[in-house]
Image (tube, rainbow, N blue to C red; front, side, top):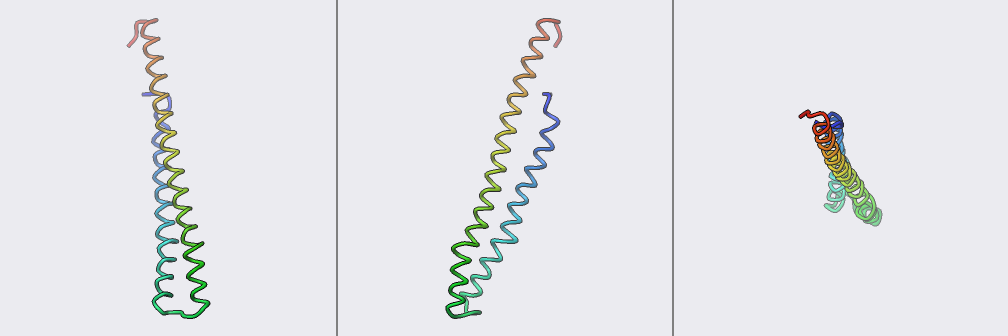
Length: 108
């Protein structure tokens, strides 16, 4: 077990929360906005104001929530990659220490 092995469980819990936040963005922001657009397009509200409202939602609000979701996913992927790099380095150092101590003191 490497020096940082205990930390990885906590980081994996955080990554799970990052995924949950992405789902929250999708469920609580993007999906309702799309439903509003469909409701307005379906005739619930008509006229220039309705058209402008739909245009704003489709060109700004919905893509903005999508970008937020993408950013959350990228953040999670970057953290996961970082953890993998740190885990590999930790294992390499652990292996080096064990082999060096084993050679010097005839342990392991």
